[in-house]
Length: 429
Image (cartoon, rainbow, N blue to C red; front, side):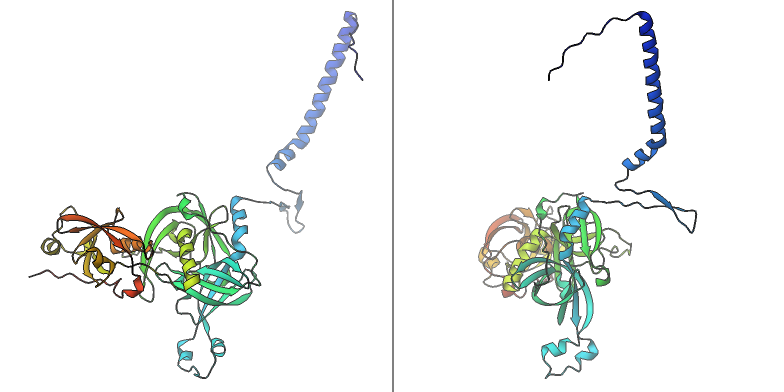
């Protein structure tokens, strides 16, 4: 129903004055009432606005301490990311016979009977990345399972299941295990490690010091990318990783566990850390390394299907130019003085890709596919990023002349036994 416009009637000045005084008094009274109410309750309202969930304080009957029953519901990118992947993270137990037991093994004992006598010799971490029918697959480090005679995987609920080693690769320090899938509910998802940025959050999950501390979470950032980390494992095999560096705490037992981003995606597999500076003995903190997820997915695919990684080979033995004396460089190599980094070919195998391409002894390789190479480690890293059947450009100096040849990588590493051997160069008389 529409309202009519009403024009107020005129009143005398006296009436207006009394009305104004009454109105002013009412307003002031109302303000005082509201102000008093705010004074009494405003502080509590301000406090509650800053606390997600609170309840009133109570007094402890045994003391004068005020106990506040505060309940805080904290959700963040970190907690969300951990929830997505945490149940896929496992502990891995490496079982081996003790030295005293191995001397008395019964040759008539079955494998199952003898495995019952195996003892834990080490623990690490892993992450379930695939569920396929009755099987589930776990990725971990090679050094976690090295020398194993039996393996157990401890799930997040504490259940222990037997595991089978499907394949391992010492060079990248990766291994794949298979377990029964009936108790597996969560599978991790890999992210794109090529899209990582220095400074973005990184979260490590694993079992530092063993399964007693399973599913421990540490947080840090991506400290650096493409760190070439090289060392030698207990079996004397070279490990070379083009690694992600992080300051998220990584301790013994974290090996093989995932490094994840804030989306809950696995961006790396934790592998190693620097605890002290070599030579000086200076203690080091916050320098951990993880194998990038894009490298991991390539390797575990080969381990699943073939149980090993097939890598191409040049068919040469080599030594770093930096380790060659000035006299040897002048008398034997005769390269320009401006060439200070590279890899010297100490020998070339017969009928190898290098020989077919015309590479000779004492050539100094300086580039692969146009990218500078300063050491044998960098050459292997560049070579192992390729597949058998690929063709690469190899740039080298033969005395004072720079040349580039195309090399067809037609042979894999296992065929050439001296691929990783180095030989010293002796000056000619």
